[in-house]
Image (cartoon, rainbow, N blue to C red):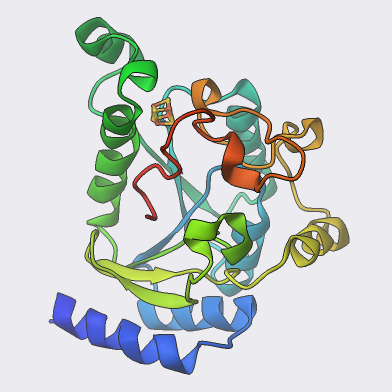
Length: 230
Ligand code: SF4
């Protein structure tokens, strides 16, 4: 049986071997190494990562954190992904409580305590889902924000206890846009309205000119990450 220590060593080796890998190479390695035991996370801002992953594994599992606070456009993008990539399996990870029950018990946590809200609606459902896998794939890029500037292609995710693969970590905004335009990739309609980093509706604003894409997330608060990646 492969243990967490084995996977940690595997991740450490792959971090060196795949340090300069292309996204296609990183995903081919992921599919070959983990088979059915990996999942691709998507916030449904676009289908770039899903499109790349499907080329390596057509029936790949796709994780969507269904917080209950998403824009209608984000839910629409998820539904469009299901139609465009019928072979993928979308795994909707939900919190224990509905939004109504949470608000009845705690009030508007996204305003009073967004860290607890993210914990209940994102971190816990993520951890519960990832417990069924040996690796997860994310669309984190180094240019997203200063906190992500050193993101490697492969790493050991100590918090969740599995291998984390970031195939498009080195991609610039121009490379990302070129992939979308060249391949006609699905994109959340909010992007063309100026939302450059889309999370839950109550916590997402358009970034101000000249600010990084994630500056519109929890705008006005010190919080910059959901607790999923940082
Ligand atoms: Fe709650 Fe906002 Fe976090 Fe979504 S992003 S889980 S609404 S605090």
